[in-house]
Image (tube, rainbow, N blue to C red):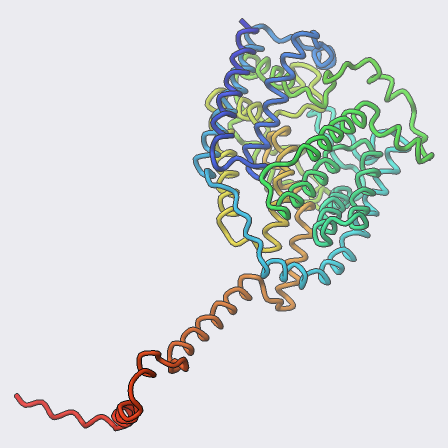
Length: 496
């Protein structure tokens, strides 16, 4: 039965993708492209690999065993979520990608280039300091964030020292590197800051930020060259990124730190990952995480989350140093997953979060809502004025979804978007504060000048000679000119 569900999953994926690929909206810039890549790997390809190789690592780590019914439910629910996301995403975002950059947009970007240096002067030092703190934690503990500890009651990782905003500020380096590459037309020298961030961030063991940075610069490159899909060369580069991602995940950046010669972390941490098979580790284990959710909810919890954990978007921005009794994780949490196993470090995924909240109906609601909102955002970008700030913001926002789909929670977009989009927001604020004209304003001014010129040309007499008049005798031409020069007689008064 489970094998039949895996086959059905492949068929469902092929049918949805077949429709999407033939639609005019298919491109690398559409949110459905990113969710299809996530779903296709995590819930279509990897379950087949896990079945063939009998993956049990997460089951042993989490101390639970899903029933055949649980495993079947996960495959069907994941595909239900995929169909719901695709349907509503295309419902609100079924428009073709349009490239609207013109001479005015290029001129706007060139005018904004000096302001970018001021943005870099503010964001880069803060980001470097933040990254250096993470690097120091990785070289001593192998875990990166030495001030982060796990709450024993909930399994949530919390910051116990310093400021969480400062700890995440290094994400601004990803956006800054991508913006530098784009503004300076992807020259090799302009790519060096991005390459530096990727190397050092990979050395800390974190993969999400450097993958987000590379995807962002890839989207900006495609937009710059008006391409909806990457070439074979870029696809080959993506394959290299996947290999780097897997390598960094296996040793948490140990190889890079040793190459730079300053790693003092204990090797015990890495020995636990030595026997992992390809794709078996926790980095790709959203299938097993979802099975844990089905195993616990509602069979053992006898309740659902009812989307209450989305309230964390209101409590998360408040620093813990200002709120001593701030709830750990989501406020008013109804379910403690640690009561049913050792669910440490799990991410729920989009359909998993839907199941956590309201079962089958929750999967449709949560995946469908995400699909509709993201499709609407895409439509606004594709059809709207694509200014420098909107292009930069959209190309930075879309790669954040890679992590958001894996985590399944709205708080991920808020937590990471604040820092990824921070440099763009500061860039925009400086431009408006200095009163720099936008591309739309310059385009409108040019249109007004063109209309005035056309109106003045229409009102002026035609200086070109009329060939028919030139053929008339000279006396007739003089008489015609005299008649035209005579004033018109006054109109007679109207008589009733």
